[in-house]
Image 1 (cartoon, rainbow, N blue to C red):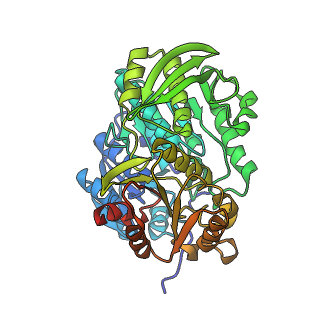
Image 2: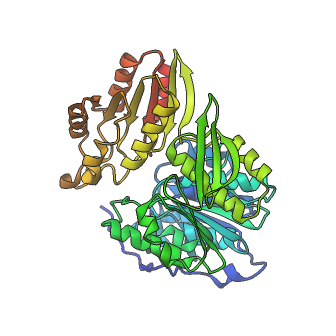
Length: 489
């Protein structure tokens, strides 16, 4: 067995920087990304490639869709982490947060004393320099809100740059360097790298922050809710006096933190007396129709393909941003009406034999509950089959075991497989799908457990009925189950 070496890379946010990174007209050509197949890293690779850099990368798990995405950009990806991947030496290495201190490339990186950055540091250096940064943060709703905000700025002719944790269907890519003055970035509270355990969003130089929600999540890196709150407080503290905090006042945790902001604050919400609210809401087959109020007075009306309370709330934050930037109302209305959503966010994959198939990223119990309720309200009178994979680092732990039992109340039928990767979770912390099924059955919800996704697919095909809406929820690939089910129909 090969001896493991420890790397002297620092455990703080001071990455080793070459002076040439800050020198105009520097000769840096080749950038190597370790962990390139992560969604954020692949997006950064595309952004850097679009700026003319020669990009290479390495990853342990090289498979579609990220491998196909990188291939389409003609970015070579080395399978596996090896010291020789850094020969010949690149001018800069970007280290993804999947990389550990003992990673063979990290050890070689230290030995060679090459300049390196984390993903957030690299984004700040290469994309945010000279831009006004709009950071969308919160436990829920970041991807949809960031995508909508970027699309609104695009339709207003402002040519925004953006980097998003999903693929907006209007852009068909989740990054753009942008020609305009604004850069919209999804502000993730997850840790930055093994040498910087602070949240990613602290690197994004916020001018405007949209804060959608604060809940306990990421149980693998946060010990409790106070730990999570501490990170969001740091983000609020970074907003300059001439910036803006756009805050969801329906969230009591956010409401309690507004006083610490040294910048102006604009609130939005569906209850109480926020600055931005909804006075009327109605639906037809294609759109949700809304009447927006500002400070209790009628502002204007718009229509959107989005549905569900959480999405309407997200939309309000984007309206507040558009008003702050003095965007024309007609551009705002057109953007909201033409917004196509995001892949894997209530994405309709298709309908076969009268069965509609929807794919969603929901994994936190609040997100699962809101998504199930939204889909049930959008398709009244149809049986809702909720298929949930507990895959995230938090959902594979029993920290949310009891809360999940209250997340499926709007579903007619629930199907859950054995969680993957359970060997990575200590036995006394493991989530139990079998227990959740039993808890749901006690609530008189029809629910079934399956040992594998193949068994789950067979169960779905056997139980499927014309008129069903089948909602798949997972923050991973789910063994391509949604499309396999649609094809199986």
